[in-house]
Amino acid sequence: MKHSRDVRLLIIVNLAGKIAAFLVGWTAPGVTLALWFGPDLLLAYHLFVPQAQGLVRVHRRFNTDRREVWLTIDDGPDPQDTPRILELLAAHGARATFFVIGENAARHPGLILAMVAAGHEVAHHTQTHPVGSFWCASPRRVARELDAELAVLLEAGVRPTRFRPPVGIKNVWLASALRVRGLSCVGWSARGLERRRGDAEAVADRVTRGLAPGAILLLHEGPRVPAMIRVEAIRCTLERLRGHGYQCVVPRAEQLGDV
Image: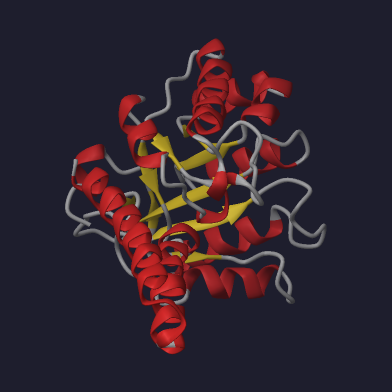
């Protein structure tokens, strides 16, 4: 309920700023512009900055006193990458959470079953991965993005409890929509940024920088990742983690409660 109040407060502040700017008018241009655009910037921060907490509670770490991290892999399943990633995870004794796109899951249900059979978690990453428009989607469209993927995953026998918005972009209607569907929002504490310059080792450097127990690591699979980095970056990361004595686990719900 706290985040519902936060959302309402952000909307009220935004509207109040517009009304105040109208009342001040151009008698004080600097004040008018600040009143008009200041609340917009505040709202934009909470929409577009992945770690912002004002609209939705986003988990960025988990509680553990062991050398454990949570490896999360977005954008699958992918017929080229997923089988190879599953082999890598098995070889390293690692568990991961796959935040899958509903459209991909519908095309490759066998890969969803393979993830589950291997002991990994399958989680929700929207039906169509609408990067450019999710932030301004209507309540009805947000519901469609959530419900369509839920239907796909339920068909495969999976009922996800965790959700990650595309590239961490949120929506003013998202908190209530997730709550109704029993989904919690998961972010990350470090990501590989696979589209930046560099090779797989550079990706592994970025995602393991500042490594600490309870970190949530974000990597990707699929054709959006450059060919020289696909899967290889996950292999490099797993080797780094093993070298530092870390284990990849999927945390329990209660481990996310206070972080």
